[in-house]
Image (cartoon, rainbow, N blue to C red; front, side):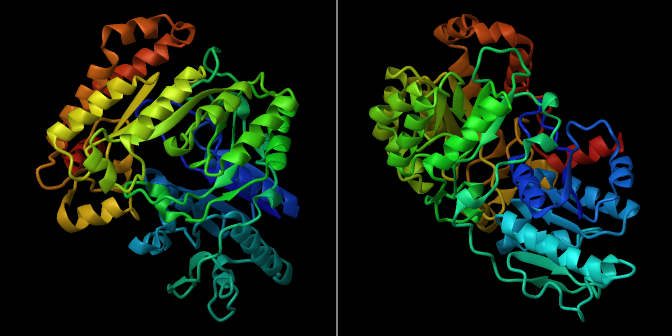
Length: 500
C-alpha cells in the first residue's frame, strides 16, 4: 500500500528549519516495516506543489500531523488532498489529541478529515492502515464514503481514534494504552526526508548553519504534571528504551548517517539516573563520544548530580537545559514544578563545574505573576547566568491546567489557533492584574537585562560559533527583543493582515 505522511507548512517568525519531524519519521518507519511504500512531504522544505506530489505518488492513505498553531494549516492540507484524491485522510499530533476540549471532534468537523489519531500514534496508525488495506483488497471500486459507512462498522474496535462516518456522525473510541516496549519500535526513517534541507536551531558544534544534525528519543512520557506544560495531555507513565537499544540507534546515526551532532528530545531523560549513566558508558565504550550532543528539552534539575553530568560530558554531551520557569518561590510552587531554587542553583553549578554549556528556560507571565515576581525571575536568570537564557511568555495551551484557569477566571487574547505561534513577542492572555502590556514589557526587559550586561556581550562576541553564524544570531536577537508588531489585539492584527 502507498502511504503519504505530511507535515503542513509551519513558519515561525524567526523563519528557521530545524530537524525532520520525529513523529512522522517513526510513522514512516513502522509503515515501511509493515511493507508499505512510504513518502514524506514536509511542506516547510518542499519545492514541489502538494497537488503535484499527490498526483505522482497516488497514495492510498494520507496522515497529517498538527500541533496547535499548525492545525488550521493541517485542515487546509486535508481539504487540498481531497481535491485531488478520494482517499482517507488521518490527522494526528498533540492538538487533536486534547479530548477535554473536544479538539478531535473539532478537526473531524473540518472538510477532508476522516479519522483522528489521539496520543501516541505508531500502533494505532498500523491498525488503521491494515483496515484500509483489507478494505481495498475486498473492493472492486474504492470510495472513502464506503470505507466510513457506519453499517460496515470497520472502525468500531480501533482504539485511540475518533472518526466521522459517512452519515456525518462523530465517534470517539476508547484510548489506546501507551506503548510499553519502546525497544520494539524501529528506528526513525530519516531516509524519507531531504536531509540536506534542514538546519539546526541551536548548533552543538562550531559548524556553520547546515551541519548534519539528527534527533533521538530515548524515553517517552513524563511523571510530572506542570500546570503550564502541553505534555500533560500525553501519557503520564514514563517509559524508557534500554541502554543497549539506544546505543544501536546512536551508532546508526553516527556511522551510517554521518551525524555531526545529535539532539536528545526526551521530556525527562534522567528520571532513571542509572539508565542514563549506562547509556553514557556505552557511548564511551563504543567510541561514539567524538560527536557532540545536547538535551534539547532539558533534564530534571533535581536529578542532575555532578557525577552523572561528568559522565555525560565524557560521553560527548556539550549542552543541557534546565526548566527553571520562575525566580519566585511561590510562583514556582504554584505551577507544580516540584523543585526548589537551591536545587536549581546546584544543578547549574554542577553542569558548569564539569564543563557543560547550559540553557535556562524561563517563563514570563505565569498565573499570579506580578511585576515584582517577574523581576525576580529575571534576576534569578542573571544569577544562574546560563550560556543561553530562553524567556517565553506564558501560552495557555489547550488541555493544560493554566488553559482551564484562564478560561474560567481570565481572558484569552487568542482568537485563532494560529495565534498560538511563538517567538513573536505577544502576550496570550490576561488574568487579574496580569495585563498583556505588563507581560510584554517584562519579557522585553528580561532579554535586554540578561543579554546586554557587559560580560555577556564580551562572552558572546568571543565565541567562534557567533562569528560563523552571526547573521542568524543578529536576526533572531533583533526579532526577539524588537518584535515587528507591538499591538496585543491579535484579532485586529490578523484581520488587517488578511485584508492586505
